[in-house]
Amino acid sequence: MNLELAQVSRWYGNVVAVNDVTMTVGPGVTGLLGPNGAGKSTLLHMMAGFLAPSGGTVTLDGTRIWHNHEIYRSIGLVPEREAVYGFLTGWQFVLSSARLHRLPDPDDAARKALAMVEMESAADRRIETYSKGMRQRVKVAAALVHDPQVLLLDEPFNGMDPRQRMHLMDLIRSMGAAGKTILFSSHILEEVERVAQQIEVVVAGRHAASGDFREIRRRMTDRPHLFRVRSSDDRRLASALIADASAGAVSLTEAGLEVRAVDFRRFTWLLPRVARDAGVRVWQISPADEDLESVFSYLINRSR
Amino acid sequence: MNGVIAGISYRALLGRRRIWLLALLPVVLLGLAVLLRAVGADGERATVQLLQNFAIGVMLPLLGLIAGTGVIAPEIDDGTIIHLLAKPISRPVIAQTKFLVAASVVAAFATVPTFLAAYLLVGLESGVAAGFALGALIGGVAYAAVFMLLGVVTRHAVTVGIAYAVIWEGLVGNLVPGARRFSIQQWAQTVADQISSSAFLTTGIGLGFAATALAVVTVGGVVWAGQRLRSFSLTGDE
Image 1 (cartoon, rainbow over the protein chains, first blue to last red):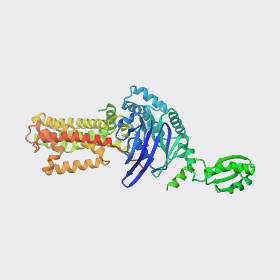
Image 2: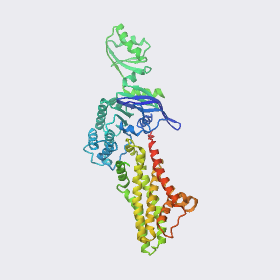
Image 3: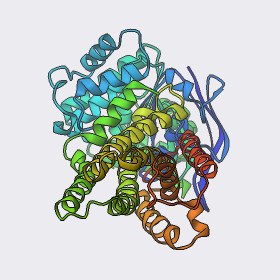
Image 4: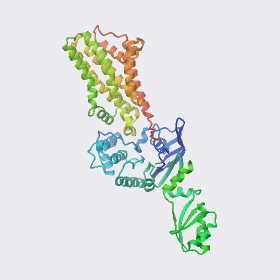
């Protein structure tokens, strides 16, 4: 199923929280990435039917989401706030979810959902005795109980210990591989990098970038890229490269050459040719800043 | 009406110590009745005054406030309501279910003690016990609807509810004759007056008006709450 946002804006009084965002979230895992306060939750709430867009439309396979409770047959939502009915046991909570969905066999569905998040052993304890990570997992189980085609998770890894986090990441990945449409928000880069195939970056209410991580990176041709190059003759390669404007700065280090490429396309085209003409054999080219953190901070700075 | 939602709501409302909060006022009412009887002031006049001023005037609005707001406001406050709202269930049905839970709790905690207090003092004389019990029942149901609506509409439901109960119903409704027509307590007493033949109970409002007003307030409150829930928004912390 496809979640579609078309020119969606949301403002609170004079404050614009989301500004003219158009994006399609399809099957697979999509990470909604952005710093705190960027508008991730606002976007997610609009996708989940818990906020009306001030402008534009939010639809699921063409069906409007706002004011439409029927969409919850297809959507599972894991809200960020950890509050759950503390007086219920995990089992009662997930079972209530199955019953509210009027599933034909709520007991079976609840059992499966609890097994999926590995919460069977604690299922008979009251939720108020759970740790933050356990609450999160039981919320995920309640959201999955009706086997929804679309799963929306707001900062799902918050408060989880590394093992729980890994487990939820595996679960999300396998659901994405099974063709479900999954979107989760996060401000933590390594989480998104590890789980999502598709990344939507939101910065200051605007849709700053979209694509897989490498694609986002490639599109930003105006961004200086740092490469580490090792070759048979670094000194000779350096002097050949520096003659071209696309290599902004070249420095010679112990580990090889560090080249700051100003024009990404031209540089990738140039390097092999320059090396060949200079008679230098290139052993290794590696991007030195190909991590999400640097892409992210670049995007934030650019949109300011 | 949804059984799962009703079950969760009853547990939230009556679970653990909260039930004592609801039981407190009825216990005070019965205690006052016992006291009046013990000092020999158990005439019909004193009974009617006790029921008017305490049972209908104090206990009923406060029970309505505790149950009416309690059935939904805390869940909205802490976000647990999302568990119910993110389901393929129409929001008006959720509001109706919450209302039925609140109304039944107010009815149980107000009607029975009111009848018992009157019965302790004057038995079944002049229909005082039956009249006030019915008045408490119908008034309590209306209060449940109004306060549940408050719980949906404002985050300060308890404050607004107390202000309403004390200022409007307590002062204005009792002192300003015109405002009396727009007071749930007065409508409840009108209902009581229909059954009771006591000369000490007089009301200035016709049954037609009171019954219509009670119906409008109750139905209106539930319908409006349902509509507000349809547009329930999470504004997030950002």
